[in-house]
Image (cartoon, rainbow over all chains, first blue to last red; front, side, top):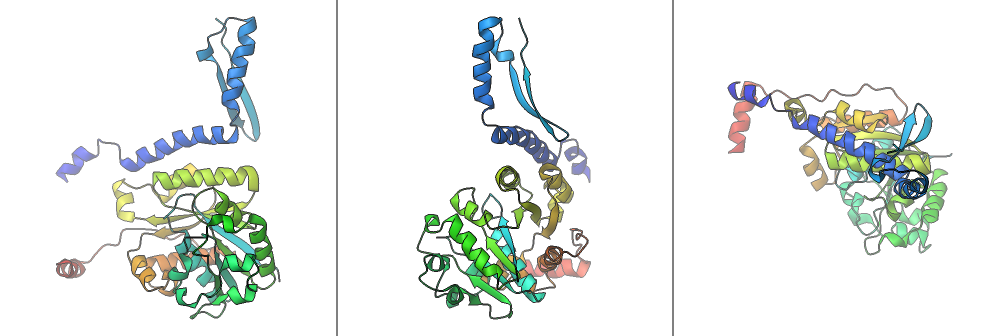
Length: 79
Length: 266
């Protein structure tokens, strides 16, 4: 109907729910599985900063699943 | 005989665990299997009322594990179906009254007598939930298509994957086809894409369930009801039969029905 025409331009709420869930759950699955990631990140910053100049904010520690192998990925850009 | 232990859980409360337990236990008994449903929601007993057996309870599950009575004395026989029994939760105690090992021991004892032991887990992921998980051969996770229920279901799935390594399957409960069509409720496929465990059932939202619960007669005893049909299908799948999933579609009202319901609503 006439009003439906305007409604359709808005993303429907079910789609939004699904997207929000996928984002939050991706995050929660990792932190529940590897609750040590935060501590590991802090320790890494301490150790690496002793030897090279780094920006702590740039350090990225994450657990990835590649097929059936789990990979701990650590990214440390040097200044 | 070595029976199978099925645990019904959800994470979030109020999504239909006890209703699912009641219907599945009745369905299995109606299919000729000897089934016992155990309410493990200690302190918040409910399965007895859903099954309409609340006036027959003498002993409960805490009495059994504390050896106040024999297991046989706590088995409440269903009034409608011969093969169905209930062990009620204690109402005056709390979750700490039973330990995981005691539930495991009870379940193992019942395996000798029953084809199916269905454990109704309490909501949450604490002690009571763990009690219900330990003896399980299969875990059925109930969710509704709402974000809180799906998120909590995912948490439960994560815990079971990490520690318990159980066979899991999913029931999506209370799907409202009108809302799905409007795009205001996640569809079966949306939920499956998020949770990615095998589906064992979809149950449409069914206004009758409230009145069935009011009178203590689960929907599977009303086979003409949409939810009753859905639970019958789930029972068949639990028994290993390949039953197609029901299409949950909007029921179109005829013009006469619309007129009648208009007057009824007044």
